[in-house]
Amino acid sequence: MYTYEQSLQMARRIAEEAASLGGRAYFVGGHVRDHLLQIEHKDIDIETHGVTPSQLEAILDNLGERMAIGETFGIYNLRGYSLDIAMPRKEELRGRGHRDFDIFVDPFIGTKGAAKRRDFTINALMMDVLTGEIVDHYGGREDLAQGVIRHVSDDSFAEDPLRVLRGAQFAARFGFEIAPETMELCSRMDLSTLPKERILKELEKALLKAEKPSIFFEELRRMNQLDVWFPELKVLIGVEQNPRFHAEGDVWTHTMMVLDAAATLRNTTAEPNGEAVANPLGFMLAALTHDSGKAITTEVKDGVIHAYDHEKAGLPLIESFLVRLTNETKLIDYVLNLAEFHMKPNVVAGAKSSVKTTNKMFDQSVDPEALIRIGIADALGKLPPEDTDTNEAFLRERLAIYRDYMARPFVAGRDLIEAGLTPGPNFSDILAYAHKLRLVGIEKENALKQTLAYARKLRQ
Picture (cartoon, rainbow, N blue to C red):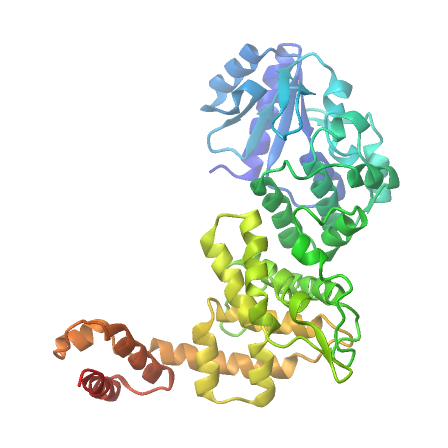
């Protein structure tokens, strides 16, 4: 894979070849936006004008191995480069679905016509690859300076409902305001025809790139666009919590605060062991859904608000939410596991529980590092935020003990077979017993004796 600088150099070579034929090449879309915002960007998108498809293909074939991303749509790249090369095109809607478009390549449509099909003015900016000249037909530079997300065209914008979520995730990533007229248009668009893959992609950007992912959901709430894809979150609005522990307000507010706290922890590396969470997206989804069960368990008893067992009661709701968005079973299982045990870290730390208890907790967790961080985010996501330093120190000390225990020699199935035990109906129970001994630190030789004794007892 070539470096970013090498990809830039290739973009210039393509622009030079296009210029020799009377054409021009422009950086487009997020590349220009991020360049002006002085934000690091890895991918490069260029659009060639004034050259025919056959001419562009000849240019690319001469410079490298041409690959068609969407040949019908006039989109190519060169193998090894982080560089997409597109031709100007126009789209005509012929149905309600996100794929119901007729797309036409038009190399001579002009920069204004090409930019009109973009979603927002800040993404309709173009920059000449060779001269650096900015082409701004729709006021994108001013909106960028003012921090405004504004749609380019009423007609073309409404043709793709995914732009509702794109507007919300841009607001979250850049801290921008959505223009009132764009907000009003978004509130009238139907999201039901979108495929789950596109929804998850926008959600992932909001969760992993925004400093405050809560803005994504707050904007969707303002647009009244939570019903189709995020109903399990919408029902948290107005669900009361015990003000003694949650002065911040309802479960929605707490969830948004936890989500933002989790965003500060998603990409960091823990000290002293240098670990990071195994799945940042799963971690953020767990933060988003951890209190889903409060929607169905919250009740008032003797004047006190409770949500007993919400962490377990919420699992079917969380699973329903995730299945709507993805078919990735590993991701779903990861989120469900963290959500189920999200309360345990602060409970065991507050009680200064035994090593046996904390070892069992970490052993149940799909990602002990992420479990600690979910506990931290949960404690920070309230008013007033709880002091997490003491609990974190305790948990990290215990996690080190757990890691040490897991690194020691242990009784495995082959050890039991070599000792004369024949696999049978109770073999998994016997292995589970051996694992319990491992968790309490029994050395292997002694554990093997105890496990064989347990097996004989079971099989009497």
